[in-house]
Length: 569
Image (cartoon, rainbow, N blue to C red):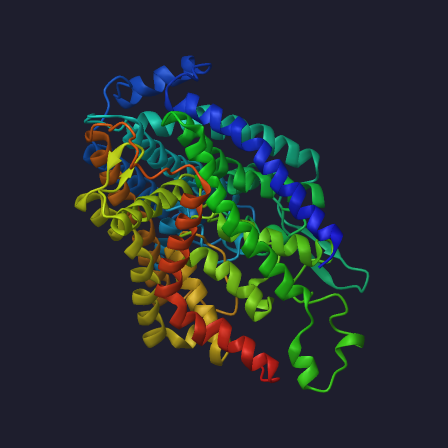
């Protein structure tokens, strides 16, 4: 660890903090319908869809609209994948995608997971990349933000029967935020060296005389929404480690800022809409504590030399393989600190983009991205998903605080009763169901997909099912996910991780909106101070830690101790 790396992290945190109130204020204007500068486009869309923006929906109708929209998107993307061989803009003649992989991929992009059991440049043509993957990057991001908006309204309103209208929220988020920012962002990426064309792959001869095929295509237009919408699906198999996706340190910084911008901004929008900006800063403070601790732990673990070298009689002080730490699987142009920061950002924010191979991280370093996902990806989290996930934990935290003092728990003037706790618990339980339940089936019947033996092999499978259920999409590598069994199980895990959370959250929004707001009293537990932030962090850690600690002990923790004894896998 060095001063340059610390400075990189501090600069990044400062930029995120500066962006938060700007993005939050604009999001609040969008949710309240005050951003109307594209009304001449917005109004015809509503007429075309038969939607009245003045008529809001009950939470159940909101959920039904969301599910129908996502189902239509999944079916459309599945059809594009299966018909790819007959579609235009396919200069390399990519074949139709097999049914199990098409199912997995369609569910993946619709749920904002963007798990890829294929190589982008070797499996998909330009038409499918643009009309399938890029479109769903926008749609899935808008879906998550819309759910967050509905939950915010639930806490902001009193004695209300509605939480907004899904179609209106999705249109406004896309039209006023995602599209304009991504148009400008894509142009900036082109200027900075990211390709945007329809040219076929270029054949080149290397200095050694070998033949090389260099893939290209409409990359920039997919890259910005990939990060802004915390999607993460790469145009290329190497993802953000590919020089066409991420050609420089400046582009790398832009990508990381885009990943956190909306998630952090939503906390500020939450505070503004409930009438107390401090509430939003408290939520962001809890997220920041978890993020900073994880980032420095990851960096410290990977900056140290491999302890197995000492066990093999290698002088670590003069280690010729790792003179500055563990550089295996990393881009030299980014180094260990920037790679650690990117890994922490993408797994904290439910974005599957990677600039380094997580499979090559030291065991304790690899533990951090895994824990980020297993905590429910509430450390800023995916766009929308991070906020509503953390608010679910906030409901649980005030319930625990109420039990400790013998008082009916309240949050933002709303009494937290049995219904709210049941809904919160259902949402939280979706992650262990997908990770441990479906993961166990994958290990029992599909262990042949695991590349490595011992605890490292367990980490590979655990990471895959955590990434799918947590709607992250990054991979630990070393796991052959493209088999019919894992395509189906991972697809189911993605659906459970997305919709078994969204539906209870929308029900929670409806329940909160229907309750009258109670004025604060002398006995009200303040939820904007350091005590609440500490309690919230503790609840997140205890719930995630107690649920997944046994399997983590058998995976990365066991590998760490084995590595110290020079036992390799």
